[in-house]
Length: 155
Image 1 (cartoon, rainbow, N blue to C red):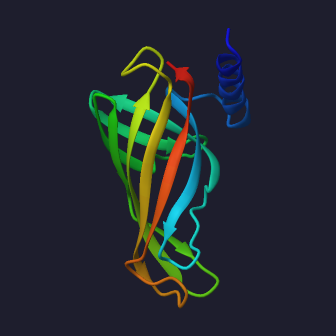
Image 2 (image 1 turned 90 degrees about the horizontal axis):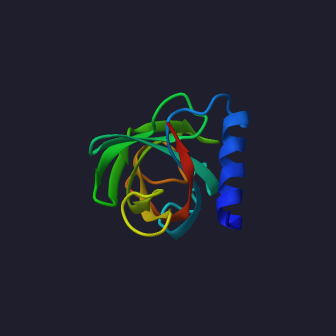
């Protein structure tokens, strides 16, 4: 077993123990880094490392942040290309609130599926669709590079 595979198995085990029973799906440990920010320093809540869970039903997919109670995005998987969009999410700021949505596209590989390799390489755009915050204007966008490794599958 390679070091990467061993670490992936450990990471998957930790997801299961830290968040309760592991739910079915493909798990990816991802790093997110803003590459362009027109929102004056608006950060995604999961900047840094995050674990996504991808659940596919044919070409239709749901994306979850591991451990969360509901999917944050839906999309389609065609060959190895995943396209997805979140629902609109409203969050309070120090002053006012913002409503944002996320769209993304990634090349994903998992186990024996898709292409050689195991991972996720993609980009997401967070767009503020409504704002009552004086520091975050409506219409601004944050472009985020998202890359990481396939951790494993829970069936």
